[in-house]
Image (cartoon, rainbow, N blue to C red; front, top):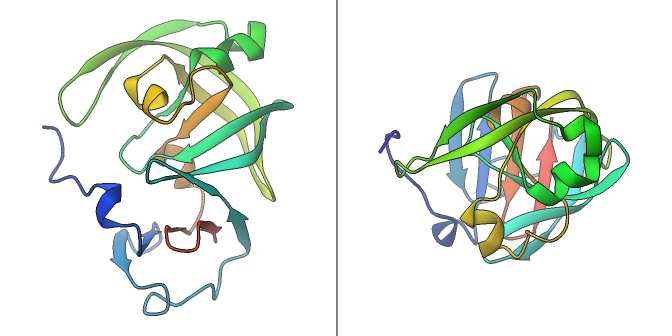
Amino acid sequence: MGAEGILGTDALQDRRVVLDFKRNRMEVGDTKALGGNSGYEIVVQARRKSGQLIMTQARIDGIRVDVVLDTGGGTSVGNRALQAALGRRGTPSQQVSLLSVTGQSVLADIGLARRLEIDAVHVTNLVIAFTDTPAFAALGLTRKPALFLGMREMRLFRRVAIDFQTRKLLFD
């Protein structure tokens, strides 16, 4: 399948997932047992949709976008609505084939964005693979700009915590 295993969001709804890039570990557990909010500089409130946490207070190059942290993807993937909103910046310079952990392949256009802003989180020079995947449709994110933020960008932080119970995303 391309992965050691898959942990579905249904099993995480009352848990916190901590991606500790400094120690190269992932921890799943109770919020308090995993240190609470101590040490996190940025806390972003999200809304829940079909078990996923969606950050709605985000912008890519000034365009409002819904963002989902995609712990299963190395590459950030934007939908076609985001590509259209970015205009020439979303114009593909090349195409790539993305492979899911379940073995499905989809063709995507590669484009660039100068700046992603999520509250106080700022990521520059973002490479985005544009395609409409079934995951966008499942979350109702096909008509307005949306992005699955991949692990490559999350690794810019020491730690990222996804707290499903409190609907918060924390960045260190």
